[in-house]
Length: 180
Ligand SMILES: Cc1cc2nc3c(=O)[nH]c(=O)nc-3n(C[C@H](O)[C@H](O)[C@H](O)COP(=O)(O)O)c2cc1C
Picture 1 (cartoon, rainbow, N blue to C red):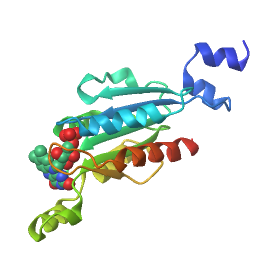
Picture 2 (cartoon, rainbow, N blue to C red; picture 1 turned 60 degrees about the horizontal axis):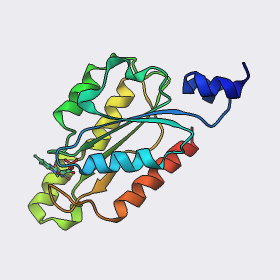
Picture 3 (cartoon, protein in one colour; picture 1 turned 180 degrees about the horizontal axis):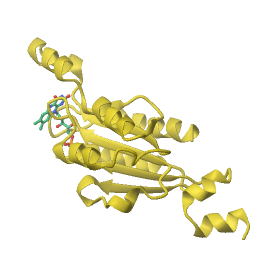
């Protein structure tokens, strides 16, 4: 079987190793009000159609989901400086070497720090944001972090996302896929 035929029928990571364009991407996310989901969907829609990309709400993810994955992206709302409990549990429950050989990236949604009063600014600076914590967990499980964790800005707790965040999300994933 030649490599092109192989790529049409066999797993995507096999294709990537053959120097072709196809990669296998999994986006795992959580979302309380739908904003993180919108970013996860924007990322998914941006990725080249020849890539095999799957979107999964964290509660729906199966342990076998990491099989043949080249790139795992995890996104969460920032809640009190952290990812949601479901994202925390998902990452915590991964075996210690589960992400060995897998590229990883992290994003969150969050408030803009400069749009808040002094006490809230201090709180936000003190507690931090979800994405760096997700990135640290991904690395701790053996993942190869391909880019700095990133945050996308919501105006209020329920959103909406700033208009420009969809373009930022699209650019972010395009830059990542160039490195694969
Ligand atoms: C309980 C709670 C705590 C939050 N804490 C923070 C925080 O520490 N820093 C921040 O930037 N945003 C915080 N937010 C705002 C969330 O980041 C925002 O609701 C989220 O980005 C919306 O995404 P979602 O629609 O996917 O849930 C908090 C929101 C909630 C509900």
